[in-house]
Length: 480
Image (cartoon, rainbow, N blue to C red; front, top):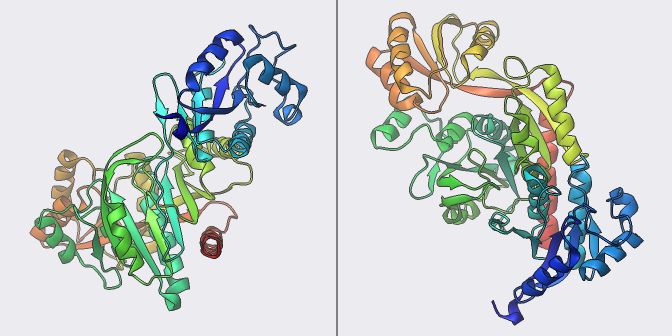
């Protein structure tokens, strides 16, 4: 890399390294980077600049300690951060301010344990990526996931912290809600990227009701007819563009995806709002005006508030926390997770929710076999909701949609006992359950998972406000 193209860099340093050693490393870095300052992450063992214990961040900003550290390490400016102090929000704010002030494109990590362990280092990585800079270490590198602009209309990203957290159900709910609100202006278009999406972006015309025959035909033609684009089109009844992705990075980038090729289809749709739905923990490669993060209360808490879950929260405007009930999580576990999210980004709105089944056609008074990806322990509550709210007689409830071997036995029992096969559109729903229903001469009805707030939160109001945020930011970008 030539000197004329050296990116501006901040350097992470600590007091467990002897400053002359750091200065020597910095001399080597200056061949590749324009070193604009440093982030001091703590430690005092080898420092001579007074007592280098890291004070509170608010008191430290612009303090004599920062000036003394700059002199000792030979850096033009130093910002104190303390990833070990248990205040991730303060770290994120300090890092973002330092990157912005320095105009830094990259942060280079010259620190190590015991100052930066795995947890503390990933907190710094999350904060740096959220601020739009890259992060480089001795044997690792992180880059902000690519985000392409969409200039034709406002847009909203729906991202998740993992697979099976209910992201597609939430995305479908917000698409239905906003399409009704914006129908006179052109409605909503959804872009869904999935592991089983089509080789070329494909428009699924959700305004017209898709029936079982349509999805069976797609499956028999070799397509994954339970991919997210079909699920969105069936349940949201909005135009949906199906895309694919393969592989996923720690910060949510896809190794390979054709979402970029779908942007001309989005721009020609004349919709009032585009909703881009991620896949698992992979985020859409679009710079949307607002971001909704769907996290599951059943996940290990660290997957939501730690690792690079922290980065996803820092990038989000609203969190919908799903499965906030036993057997997924206790009330205490839900409260602890909400507290953990707010520790990372104070003021971030969080709506705790549960899911309830919503058949697309009436099943009252019918003997129903219900097929789901929910764990077996959750099925009694879901079956009770089908009985209490929809009048169904649930004669079989199977959690085996994603287990084809177990599913074969379940569909065989259903053919003997049920009038109606009721299924989510996931996993083997079409090529196994729908095919078995057709072979047995049984009616097949699709079943959505409807998110419902579990406290006084106004879920639909929050989602509508998020759309307003996306539209307001689009206007700002357009004016700029």
